Amino acid sequence: GENVEQHPSTLSVQEGDSAVIKCTYSDSASNYFPWYKQELGKRPQLIIDIRSNVGEKKDQRIAVTLNKTAKHFSLHITETQPEDSAVYFCAARNQAGTALIFGKGTTLSVSS
Amino acid sequence: DAGITQSPRHKVTETGTPVTLRCHQTENHRYMYWYRQDPGHGLRLIHYSYGVKDTDKGEVSDGYSVSRSKTEDFLLTLESATSSQTSVYFCAISEAGNTGELFFGEGSRLTVL
Image 1 (cartoon, one colour):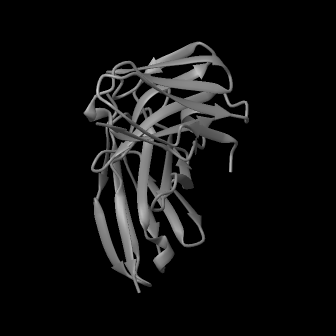
Image 2 (tube, rainbow over the protein chains, first blue to last red; image 1 turned 90 degrees about the vertical axis):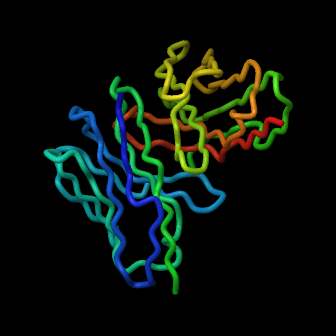
């Protein structure tokens, strides 16, 4: 079945540094790749997504890149701030094409 | 926030007892999902629904059943709860299935003693 691998599991950066989280997927038919942010004790919320006909998408300090050939996509956060501290999840569709399955998450800690 | 509520938000039960978690939406979205979240495992898909009375299994469906008799309600049932089912359960809804945004409920924390 579909497998979504996410790395690293934890990431610690200094405020102002950049952070990069990477995910790989196995189903070449996947065409939608979202990223969710979950703050402590809260529900996951979509922060950015990308579709397979686009190689990169930016929204202020966050960006997502997609390499369909290599079947991986990455989340880039620039000029990190303490409020960026959270768990980040990537996702891709399952093999049946009917639901999203998630990576195991990356805990990002931004220290000031 | 999207109109999605889960109940109960917290529950403590004993091994072997049945438990039902309810997800209610006011958005009229077609797709509804149940995920569980555990440390080190992220969000894992239990069951999902793509319409009234249309449901299917996810990654970790053993020990769980679901029902969707109305568009707005998606029930998750643990017929005989086990300690391994202690988890935080999230319901999610989507208008576009696996190609659109998921809106999550606030989560239901279940503890099985």
